[in-house]
Amino acid sequence: MSAVAFENVSIIFGDRPASALPLADAGKDRGEIQSETGQVLGAHDCTLSVEEGEIVVLMGLSGSGKSTLLRAVNGLNKVARGRVLVNDDGDMVDVASCTAARLRRIRQRRVAMVFQQFGLLPWRTVAENVGFGLELAGQGGKERTETVKRQLALVGLADWGDRKVGELSGGMQQRVGLARAFATEAPVLLMDEPFSALDPLIRTRLQDELLDLQSELKRTILFVSHDLDEAFKIGNRIAIMEGGRIVQTGTPREIFSNPASDYVADFVANMNPLGVLTARDVMEPGTGNGAGEIAAETPIRDLMPRLKEGPLTVTEAGAALGRVTSDSVIARLCANS
Amino acid sequence: MDWLTEHKLPVGDAAEAVFDWLQEHGGWFFDGMAVAMEALIEAILWLLQTPHEMLVVLLFTAATAALHRSWQVPLMVFLGFLFILNQGYWEETTESLTLVLSACVVCMGVGVPVGIFAAHNPGLYRFLRPVLDLMQTLPTFVYLIPAIVFFGIGMVPGLIATVIFVVPAPIRLTHLGISSTPKALLEAADAFGATPGQKLWKVELPSALPQIMAGLNQTIMLSLSMVVIAALVGADGLGVPVVRALNRVDTGLGFEAGLIIVVVAIMLDRALRWKQ
Image (tube, rainbow over all chains, first blue to last red; front, side):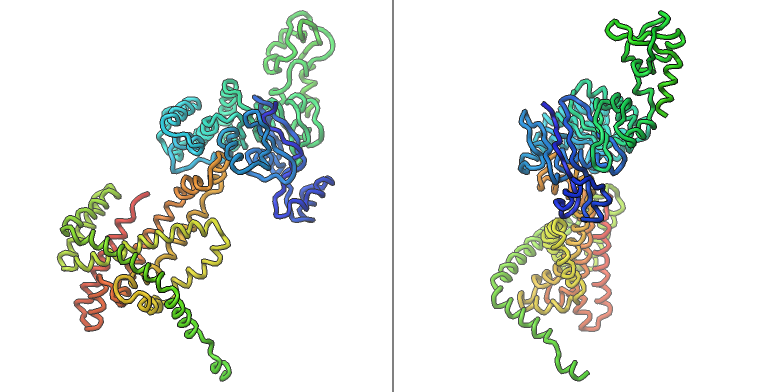
């Protein structure tokens, strides 16, 4: 069963969303719809399902509707048409039409969120911020203190609980944001460009930490990013958005090797291929000289140092598929640019 | 031009009619309000006048010290009180402090909830703003007249006039504080499932606290500025000797009482300006 499912979701900002839907259905773009109806198209006809334990990255340029779509999952954005289903203890609830009490329950226990600008309460200490979600859900006293302590240790801020959040660096503040989201034990995490406001080194480190935590915690994560390298690193699957519509959904490899449109191809051309390609992608027909064998899924980062041994035979389940040579690697890398 | 002056709009008559109607039909309401305010004033006055004056002075000094965690400001407050005692204005000072404190209780009690409500209903605030402007710009003497009609003379009409003049300040500042709560924080609260009440108490009020405290400071200072005007409708306090000095053209008495008001104002202002 999926943890979150978007079914033909349209989101329109304005006072008469219904007036914009027919135009959007006719395939008009955001500018045309705005000049004709005064409504702003946020997202249109998006269908996507996120399986339990999966990380799906919504990816696109700014204004492509990725955050807009993400924020529909916990009802921060209103849905004009379609359904946003969230698994609430085995019960798929449509967030767009459920009661206020049900929505609050889902926000308190099923879906937590991490914000780009952290969204921490500056007058509170780190520990009080981490416990915020639990406090709202009515969990009190000792139990909350224990949970908060555990979460702080998890994100490496065990000694910082009594500090005010303003005393922390950006990277540490976002760790507090992560701990706050983890603390409610919500199975679904929404992450709205959580690392975009951080400098590159800290960003990479937090991405690694998130992946480590995920291997332990196994949450379902819906992650918004405008950075394809980040999306490829973090996502099990990626949904690429343009002008409010999802233009391609697939695993990083599928997108890399088979971009659905020029827009996607542009993204792909600008990313670092070393993070995605495997031996399978760079092999050519033929066999190696027996110097070595290599599994088909080996990333080329690990493969390249071994090329000095001579051509390598690519194998899968014991069978030879082809070979990798320096030339074949270079040929594949050139194909993308 | 003649035509214009011959057809004078009946502004004065209209105001009188409104107040007559209010007096006739709302008498029970104003009587009830007078009783409540009288009780509040009596209670505060009792608290300030029953203990020995040095005890009260020490309590105020200790409270200042607790707020400031330094010695300069509490020392200044203490010396200020000694000066007041030395000049023999202790009773008048406690009466004026009573007026200020009662005005604080009423203005904050009314102003903060109204400010919150206005921040949550922008339409209401559009209607409220000209009313607040009117309350602050209408010369205070003008609404002293109906205050006497409704409440007689004494502390209560003085308090009413003070409240009318002062209450716009905490309303405006609370409105400002609540409506400038960062949207990101409200969203974070929503995302974690806050009820409207939780959002108010855990996000909006703490975020607006600096402005609300500024409102309290304004309330106290503006109330103090009404001390002399309140004396005109029979309120006790430091305004009484000032009015008496004016009637008798007694320069010495006027300066003496005026200086005490300044000292009280400085003490209150400094004492309330602590670091948040």
